[in-house]
Length: 97
Image 1 (cartoon, rainbow, N blue to C red):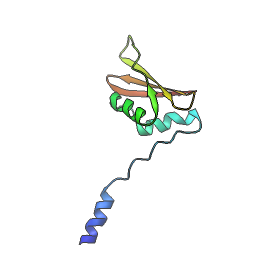
Image 2 (image 1 turned 45 degrees about the vertical axis):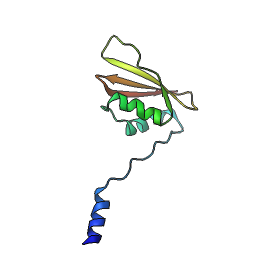
Image 3 (image 1 turned 120 degrees about the horizontal axis):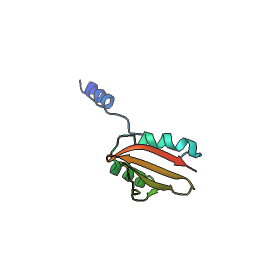
């Protein structure tokens, strides 16, 4: 019975999320970022996740619309990531060389 409880415990616990690894090319960056910070996530949490993974994000740019953009620089690369926010939630991610 005790062995079954231990097996059940491990079967019910999810595996940890894969750690973020910066891809070799910018074309793969957007997909990897969306795996870590999915669309719809609170923008504050998305920015925190970016900082924790070595990105330097600027405050959101002013906008005349509901959508705001935060520009993030990738450490050690010339790439730029733009987090697009609408109503306090991440709407999209863009990655550019």
